[in-house]
Amino acid sequence: MKNSYDSPVAACAVVSKSKPEIPHYLQAHYWWAYVHPQAVQVFERQWLVNLILWGNYKRLCNALLADYGHQLPGRTLQIACAYGDLTARLVDCVTPGGTLEVIDILPIQLANLAGKLPPEAPIKLHCMDSAALTFDDRSFDRALLFFLLHEQPQAVREKTLAEALRVIRTGGTLTIVDYAPPSRFNPLRYFWKPLLDRLEPFANDLFNEEIPAWLPKAGGFEMVGKQRFFGGMYQMLTLRITEKKLPQQAEQ
Image (cartoon, rainbow, N blue to C red; front, side, top):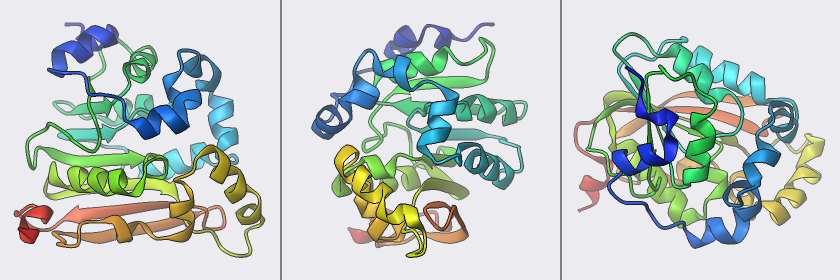
């Protein structure tokens, strides 16, 4: 039976009971990349996505899929759509009986993603805010944040991380792929960072601070994997949920 995601706007209305309001920071700073109706036509080009990451897109995707063992049993959550072919490759890794679910706050991005996927893929799309997921606690086996955190202000970034950890079952994993503080010997540190300051004002945080600084202080997880790429400018972190209690519950 054909899934409803091949009609993405309708699918969003069915899967999500309400359409979340687009955050101000997204409208103010990223209208040109994600919100504007022409953005998809400009950025949905594999060569351009690879160029933006200095030729590292395929390498980072390969590292992620290898870390998953090219197998995605159970329920997997990708938090935010991404330009390029990553989601299609994740779909290919879903094992029989498993599902991949993708959330994004922008219907235009969900529509774009739906157009890149085969009609029988085991996937569900949700129009949802990463900082206020409506999924039940401990309802996913794993979650993925692929180049999302650098686009969010700190307060939103912290909520996104807390929400991602909340919906993963004990023993499940959260994988984060994003920018990192590059080595001082990396020449792009002195060129790319000032450019990002103009185009993506929150990315500077990831150039100056490690991601654990924004994780819930109460814990409930452990770092089980850490890789750096391209002179340290990119990173892949893997966290495993270690306790049945929710990280934020210990703070109450």
